[in-house]
Length: 310
Image (cartoon, rainbow, N blue to C red; front, side, top):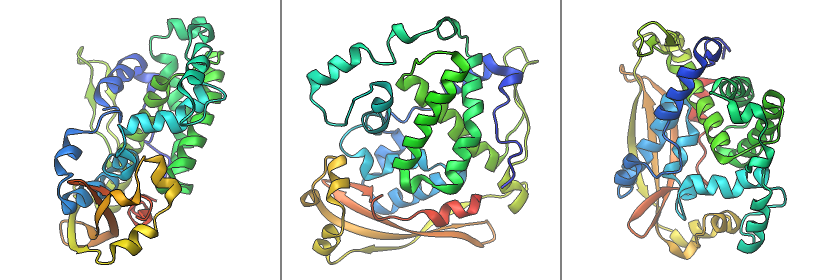
């Protein structure tokens, strides 16, 4: 896929657009209204999960429908598993709370690590960091993908620490810095697929978003439309065998036991154009815990959905 039109044009509208990004992008730290109210229906869960990936290549937000969001807010899972080891050297997920408090006293998110550049940044340098990180994020999407979220998060955040230090000249790092850069890249990647419309700031002069042609528009036509539908829902009859196939190590990360699972299902979902042409299909595996269905991200393979954008 071409690299054209993928990046936010921070050089043109740095302060305005970065403020807009902070407002528009919904941090993954909350379990969204949408995901909360579809969670009781396995078909709706599968369709919404698939559609989130298909429409904008957004596996990041799709994880809000998965087992990874079960134990706590998904943002907290990302913090504990992948952010804190970067912010607090020596941190390990699940470590003793008192030991963690000691690490926090000298973490990279403390004022002692802030340079004047960090203290005085109005958004321009933060925008520059996100801009510099974009190509790396896009490369991770092409070569790794969100099915292997651990590799994506680990590599991305380690690279972010390097890039931010180059731009700001200090070691400062926080979960806000990490979420902001990542979500800006996720949004820019989605825009590279769908294209964007020209938008002006409140002064009706400053361009905060240029009009661009997206990859999907080039391939499927300017007025393309994706329709995501569940074609078949199959309740898995041999539940015990299914549960035995799940990685205990992965389940423990989500604070889940196989015994918590009362049902499992496989949902075939198609993504089609308006004329009925199927452009991608995926088998979405789900498990039911209590009254809620979750995509089993341990088992589900979404590579076919991302192939549309590659």
